[in-house]
Amino acid sequence: MMRIGLGFDIHRFTSRGGTLKLGGVTIPHSRGLAGHSDGDVLLHAIADALLGAIAGPDLGELFPSSDPSLRQADSRRFVEHSYALVRRAGWRVANLDAVVVSDAPRLAPHKPKIRQALGRLLELPPEAVSVKGKTTEGFSPGADGISAQAVVLLERIRRRPQSTVHSPRRASAPRIRRSGGKRSA
Ligand code: MG
Image (cartoon, rainbow, N blue to C red; front, side, top):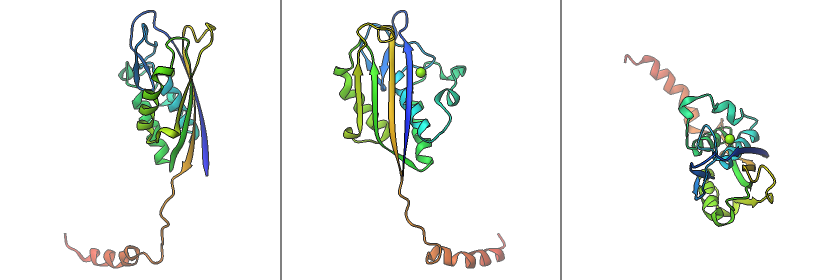
């Protein structure tokens, strides 16, 4: 059994300064991305893909930008939370594929680090994490900001078959309850 989830996000550059984060990695650039959190557009797309795959609430519903405690928040937290919901629902990530649309900076030199960081967040081997960079030849929004799309595939976590008839713990349960009833303390 499988599920698929799609995420998208877009942030404009700050007017000047700031720290640019992509996939939880700090990328050297003259400007960061504007946002209530750290503006990590790639992690926001990934979190929404995870949440979408389990038909959960979207990222904005879970972490509203009106929440002052999320100001400058590390967006890895959003992905960790979304991934925890995925696991709790009985799924694990099979693979992640993402596109980052950015004229500058170019993604290529940072891809290995970003893939590694994403693999750590989602407990995935490198061959299950793909990030691709795209440019727009100056066509907005590639020039004024960065957008990201992400797709995740989920697969069911296999559960150990549970025997209700032959389990020794189950068989002894009624006796424990009976003797427990006579205890004074
Ligand atoms: Mg965002």
